[in-house]
Image 1 (cartoon, rainbow, N blue to C red):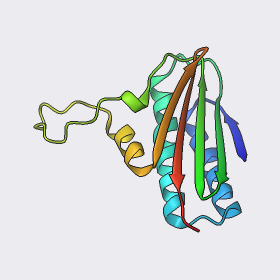
Image 2: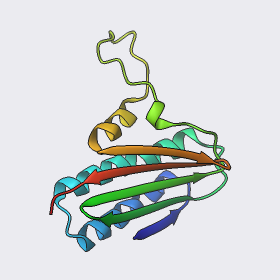
Image 3: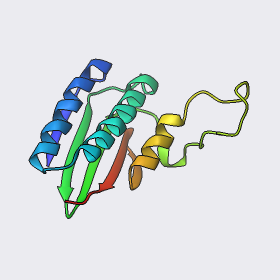
Length: 135
């Protein structure tokens, strides 16, 4: 298991990329898996920083690998509840004038990952994504 605690600021993305790079090398994962993990992590972390400004603490990231399944977990402390598993899907058929801003990144994470889970307890939001990989 690889863990990282980072400050709630966009500049911390660099540390996430390094964590994922180390994890991918350690578990001999392919470039496609690396790309999907990085893109998902960037989207989830950026949303936490951008939309949960009231957050009171650092953000924890945990990566683990077991039986050809990658698990990546984000714990965001001191925030309001926002269950991404219930987020409204973007309306791809709407006209440009009627399109709502937002939601595309969450949609991409749901499409790229095999499973997305959400927990909320004691003002801590926990998003866990899973990716099945072949080795």
